[in-house]
Image (cartoon, rainbow, N blue to C red; front, side):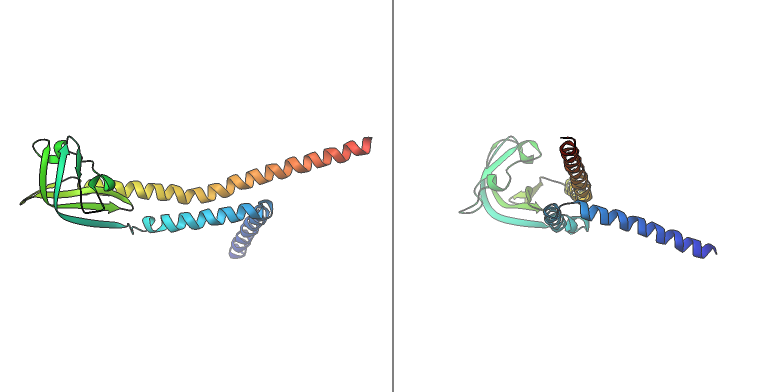
Length: 188
């Protein structure tokens, strides 16, 4: 008897949610469903890899680079087509960890690209290397990306709710105005 009641309650809950979903489906205009679908696909494409810890991290290395350092900024040409400024020329340490402003020749400079954002990872002058960002900063960047991806995925159901409320209100206003014009025409 208890098992039968349990499954009856589950069936009633499922029927209730089915009625709600059918009502939402019928209320929202098909054009809105298309927009919701495109938004959902776009957000899934960009957010799901991040949510499953598949970050797009690349490290690029350039060798024998002449640079000029001024306070927290490093400038120089990496190759014929790319300058440091085009990627990211900002350092997190004064003089980029060196003793003073000036011109230097780097034996190597590494850039890290975390999901489309470039940062100077480290650079070496002869045998001595300097780190610009630490592993904790990379982890913070990953956490920030994960947070943004989570918000983007939560935006999909919120978008459905907002569009539903807008469609329901618009439908109510149109039918109310329609009823009012019918009653006005009956009186005249």
